[in-house]
Amino acid sequence: MNERKRIRVFDTTLRDGEQSPGCSMNLQEKLEMARQLEKLGVDIIEAGFAISSPDDFKAVQAISGVVQNCKVASLSRALPEDIDRAWEAVKGAKHPVIHTFLATSDIHMKYKLKMTREQVLDQIDRMVRRAKGYCPDVEFSAEDASRSDRGFLAECFTAAVRAGATVLNVPDTVGYAAPQEMYELIRYLKEHVEGIDGVDISVHCHNDLGLAVANSLASIAAGATQVECTVNGIGERAGNASLEEIAMALKTRADYYGAETGIESSQIYRTSRLLSSIIGVPVAPTKPIVGANAFAHEAGIHQHGVLNNPLTYEIMTPESIGVPQNRMVLGKHSGKHAFADRLGSLGYELTKEELEAAFQRFKDLADKKKTVSDKDLVALVTAQKVNEKGTFTLESFVVNSGTNISATAAIKLSVGGETVEGVAAAPGPIDAAFQAINQITHTDAELSNYSIQAVSEGEDALGEVIVKLLHDGEEYTGRGLSTDIIEASIRAYVNGMDKIHSIV
Ligand code: KIV
Ligand code: ZN
Image (cartoon, helix red, strand yellow):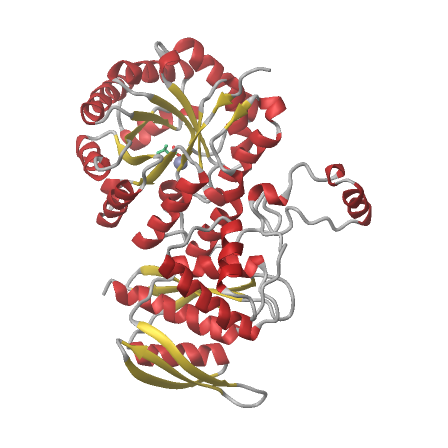
């Protein structure tokens, strides 16, 4: 049997993904996500763009300090101060990477960089050498590579290899390329870049025409050995190539691609849920691999076939990506042992304290709900992981609403150990509750988005509310989980307020 080619997965959820609107994360959330990416088995985590802001710098530095099993990269423009800053941020990592980029297409060089081809070649040489002076692993990206003149692109990559680059990245920055074109471009570069055999060829595809995954796979077929992608395909505009789609395409069609990644596919569902919960961006039901309908068979003929033999309509199983299967139902009489056991088989490793706190939450939930499903457990543990204990804690609430009356809300929060009450009236119950919280926190945040979705099935399903709050030009995401949607909304708003106050 032929050896499978090993494809490296370069995850840029925390850089290209995070910089897209509505996807921002705070430091604690980025760290939680980085730990999960490590469990998922990505090869490289692009943790941020160190020079872009002090927060990005801190995040790259902190992730470099905790991640052990993957490389950690910082993006940097091909400028001396960017490269120095990137190195400062990643130098504590076990396996640091400096990822530097410069545009090579005529349109970018003329209108954005205002540089000639000679100047671009010289800049690549000097900046890759500078990065190499710090770090053995240097990736060079030719921004807008797919729209660059091929001959010139090959010259740029040759210069990068000579200067010490270990990875050459070919971005389809604006999502313009077609799969066959990407295939031919990679073949061309393999033939025309001097020294290319000694380095990795990477691709970084955007999804403007819905072709990011197809373009990445075509590039692998042509000889690329690394793919750059994001969880749930988040990223600039229409997003980046989706990590889970590439990983499962390679796994499911290993016969065709003859390639494999180091992705632990049973961690895919959990990683997708964690990201979605952190950024408050739900996954579309029809999203391949991780969408709610990805494994749902509705048509009678399909159901019949699947019952007789799942392979009739199922090319991969939900278990293979870690979708909870509800093998054992937990309820209020379940003990800690059964609870810990279930979490273990769902792939969670919690510390003693985390387990204690999760068990308490589980008991509270089991008091309200007849049975607690695996999906409830995933939501419970995810919420615990991403919701830090903050300044405000909900103690109690009473909300009244009905026809022909104004809604009223009386809310008690514990603020640094002291109980403070807020009372407000408004046309709707959630509005009234949020105004009462504004009173207590003395904060007038603008609610820019509110969403609610059921985490599991049934009338007593857990509801997850996500709020986006605007305060002083920054956006904060709050999350709340409860079987009562008013309580979930209050918890989400309080969580958002906590985040605002944690940085004041
Ligand atoms: O899309 C792009 O070109 C990028 C580069 C910085 C790699 O994100
Ligand atoms: Zn990009």
